[in-house]
Length: 434
Image (tube, rainbow, N blue to C red; front, side, top):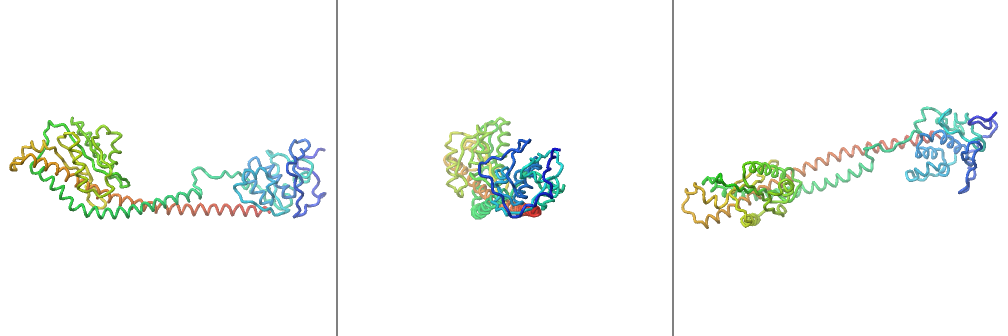
């Protein structure tokens, strides 16, 4: 009668293997002799722990990952030479293991139809079905129970979009670095805001005084005049909230309204930010752009240079407006505009007769000085609004960074505890197999 799968020498006919004895290892490069009738390589003589691991490998490898096989073999006290499949896949993941000889082992589920049958004869012919049910060596019957099958289920590793400890640590480090930057910028902006607010009070006199002539003389451009100059005041630096976008939005609305009214509109951008916001959609409207604005506190000399460039540009506008952010408080500002007129428009106004005879040179000088005053006033208002908005934005960014750091720290601790718990479960499961 041919022997059935797993049959061999009866259990009572063989002496139990001695604990602590290791058979001589197979020479490097030597090939295993095939088992009769199976065509499967037959391993060399193994101890009961190796013997049990071989059976578990054969019965469980259809759904067992190499990392799980390596953990099982290390729990059984085996060496890397006994599990070539697992060692190749997990050698970089686990530290080197020093085997301790043991006589215990683990078994596999009996009666599995999808398992590869062990070879008959040789060293493995000594292990029968009864050995698998109670474990080779009698020390790991837990592997034969159905509840222990989950130990050999494949570990799929990291779940998609699930942050690991390394990812959380990297995010924490980057957010902490950003928080340092925001706190530093807040301190710098607070110092610049204090200076800008002190300089704004005397600068407001320039704006109110320059507009006194326009209001009293009721200067208005004639309806048949079509040329309009639009000046937007911003700066070269960002991280200040909606300071620049509010200017760009107002200018876009003005350009649309004036174009619909049939007027020729030209745009002058003070600051690189306003140029970047309008270049793509309204690039053909630009007449001049000025950079290097906002790096230092604006002075009357800067406003005079801008006014001279406007007057020497060759564009003879009839009227225009300066759009800027008017400072109201530390947390509030308002986008406003001030009117400007050309020399011909002021000289041709009918209400100008309330004044005595005005010489043409005096009127020209006064017009140029008024344009410089309005620009200086607008620059001061915009600078103060920008510094206050940047200080508020950096304060909010620092608070948000603190909240994110707290949440990520909590997530890091929870993830670390989960990893430690998982490792403890694996250690306990491996110790229970011995």
